[in-house]
Length: 496
Ligand SMILES: Cc1cc2nc3c(=O)[nH]c(=O)nc-3n(C[C@H](O)[C@H](O)[C@H](O)COP(=O)(O)OP(=O)(O)OC[C@H]3O[C@@H](n4cnc5c(N)ncnc54)[C@H](O)[C@@H]3O)c2cc1C
Ligand code: FES
Image (tube, rainbow, N blue to C red):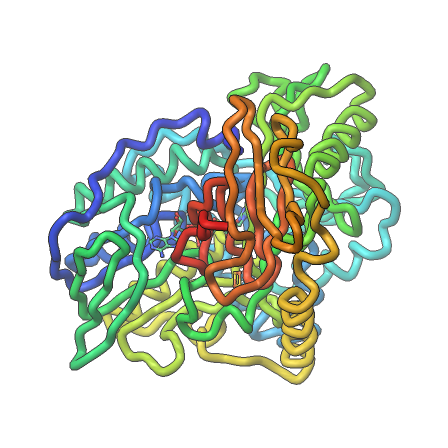
């Protein structure tokens, strides 16, 4: 599962943490949010250590669509309905400012990341009506929005809301540049260092790692997509949603702007400069992480949509998937983790974490420096939300409970491990014992106990990405049980 971005950019390697360290701020997670926050902190004069479980930019941030825009689908009419015009305006301002701040950082640090200013479109394939409300909302909030007849989208559309002067970039090239800027500013980066615990005492947080060495810090920023373990209780306040992407070459020049459709199924596109003038990225196939086994069918649906839209036989040159977390009230959680004065978090970006992540980095940096920030209250990490939001949380958590109970039994195949074909994986019921098994293309057989090491939900096999995925809170594991995405911090047991 290599994305077009991770396959086409070099991120210089950094050593693992081998000895104990002290720092003013420990940032956990080397994705878009952790790296950006660490850089802003270091440029602000803080002594920063960044700890990354794997490679920098290799998880969700390395698998995005690479759109940096204040246009988050057709969100603004909904935001006004739910939060009122003042809060919706704050969100719009924050994200519109973030677009400029990302472009400004790329320029000031001379980051070569294929950054292009381009329009973003949210379009309806079949009706103008639903977009009228959205364009009115966006204009009322001061966003650069206009309603068009859809002919400028480059994908069949009945109407579109166009935001001019947004940004597309190569996210991994950008993050490699941010990491280089961070080390220039004095930050220390350690890869292959998984954090397994935080222990807060007497104004110091002890950050413990899987391999043993510790970091002691005055402040800790947890930027691990979803806070790992049980930190802050965010597992009960967010839901994971996975999407799939393909990079293709069209038979004609690709549309110049970035687009996303309303309704279902959602299709999101943008040019793929690495694929030449015809290169296009198509993202969609959204579903709860760990809820679909046949993800091959999802990639095929993206290929079919591209083939029929441009009337040719499309082949995907790269394909990948990733997930992000949503919150019940559409707003991310950024700020102090409940009950802690030293632990800060950023999560729940609703698949718009490139602009929201820049907003988050600014808020977190200002909290450490004890400065005011116009968006701290809006993104408050301690809020629970209104009655509608709480009702949704309860419903989602009932679904999680269901996966504990019914998990494996209904999905297991009866059989023997030696019947598993090359490339085949899944749950196997061997005399009443359920085993997770996969035979790779070299014929090597991997077996694991298919129970999530986070809090024990049943895992589901994902046949195209060849991963074990958890529907409860989104942890993902490789066939040999290695943690790919938290909140789990421990690998799957191999003694099944
Ligand atoms: C398919 C898809 C497309 C998207 N497209 C866009 C887009 O076009 N525009 C946009 O604005 N947003 C987009 N998003 C959302 C955006 O990509 C995310 O919100 C953003 O990348 C989140 O960044 P992050 O740093 O929180 O997460 P990540 O990139 O996942 O970084 C978290 C890091 O923490 C590390 N980590 C985890 N646990 C530990 C631990 N215990 N110890 C140490 N390190 C740990 C991980 O290895 C990882 O590197 C998209 C999301 C998806 C799923
Ligand atoms: S991610 Fe929480 S139980 Fe699997």
